[in-house]
Structures are given as C-alpha cells and as structure tokens.
Image (cartoon, rainbow, N blue to C red; front, side, top):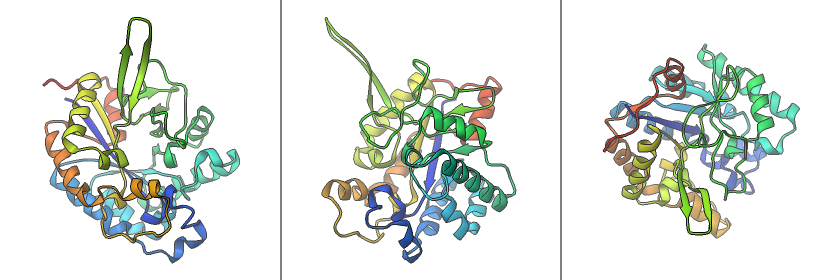
Length: 300
C-alpha cells in the first residue's frame, strides 16, 4: 500500500523565519501564543481522517506548552525535535548546534517519557556535516533535506542518485534521511539532457499556493514512482485570524499569508483524496522499511 507521511513543524506564527526582523527572540515572550489551538485543530482533522502523523516540536514551545506535547503523543502521533530556538543550523557553530540538539531532545523526552528519534532543521538548513552531528547526538533519522534548489535557506547534502525524493535513505548503520517529496522531471532535446528538474511539492507555502486539484495530481505522480509521499505543514498555516504584521516586504507578506483561509479545506480535500493510502509516522515507516515492508507504488 502507498504511504503518506504527514509531518507538522510545530512553531508559532511569530517564530517564522520570514518574520524574524519583526520578532527577534527577545520579543517572543511578549507575543500571543496561538499554537495550542491551531495544533489541536490539526489533531482533530487527523483523527477524523485516521491519520498518524509526526510532529517536529520546537523546544521553546514545548517548555511553555508541555500539556500540548503530551496530548499529541496521547492522541497517537510521533513526537520529534525541531530544535530549541528555531535558529538556522547553518548559522550556528557546531558547539552551539550540539547543545541545541541535545537540549531539545532531552526536553521532549522528559515531557513524554519516551525516546525521541527524529529531527528536522529549521528552514531545512542542513548539510553533510550537520547530519553527522545530528546522528552523534543520538537521533535515528533526520527529515531536513529539501531537493528544491531555488530557496536560499535550504541546505544541500550528498544523496545517492535517484534517492532524493521522499524515499528513506540509509546514511549509516543506524541513521536515515527522510527527504521531503518534490516533483522531479527529466528534460531532453536533441543536444541536451537535463536531469532532476525539480518543482517544490512537499507542502508548506507551495501547498497553499497551488490549486488543490493540481497538487493532488502531482502527489499521485510521486506515489506512482516511489510509493511514498512526505508532506509538511505548520499550525499557523491554518490560522486565518493570526495577527497581521505591518511593514513586511511584499514578497514575504505574500508567502506568509497566501491562501491561509482556504488551507483547512484544502488539507481535508487532500487527505480524503488519498484515503486508500496508509498515513503513518516517520518512525513507523522506517520500522516497516527495515522489516522489508516497502510501500507499493500507487496504481491508478
């Protein structure tokens, strides 16, 4: 059966990288916390559609909302780490990043009483060197690689050919990468072959921007090829009543607010369209893969 891995990066509206000039970390404690209500909205949607998801939770929020972390786990979902301060990994020293990785993992384990296996870097700011450090800090998998190359904050890592699109990649004996799913094309003409032309199709703002009917067709194409699709979103993307920030650059304002009012209905439509697929957490998917239970490509 084809698998869909829905992942939620649990951060609040004022912690988004595009809003950093307006909300430095020193101001976070003065901002309205809206993440609990928005995350519970997603939890209710997932329950209605029998979805098991993975929640990559920011340590700063977990410290202030431990009840939410426990509720996510009690309602049958996986808890994973999104770091502590939403600092881009590429902007941190290795010693500071190591502390962030340990701190967020230990905090979530103290709250849940269970081991934390997964990590996702803020804004997919990953590298080969950072991946090795993540493994050294005791994580079993990372899900930070986004193969779309036209975003300035997304990192680059070495991936085996043909293994960069939503398929679990074994990087060492005990460590895996779960890359975000994108659409990949090969462009050919009589004189030139261009491989791996990539369109961003993993969720987030791209999901909000594209018509849901078109988005579903792209997901079907990915599932036909790999049998697995990895989707990401954020709780604030389902909150049309969040505070509006004045003085934003027009392009950043568009990227942050586009189609937020329609997003809940789009997510419902997406999950309904693929109800025949197996919606599983990242850890459950990896456990099945290790047992040789690979997802089957979608047949339509």
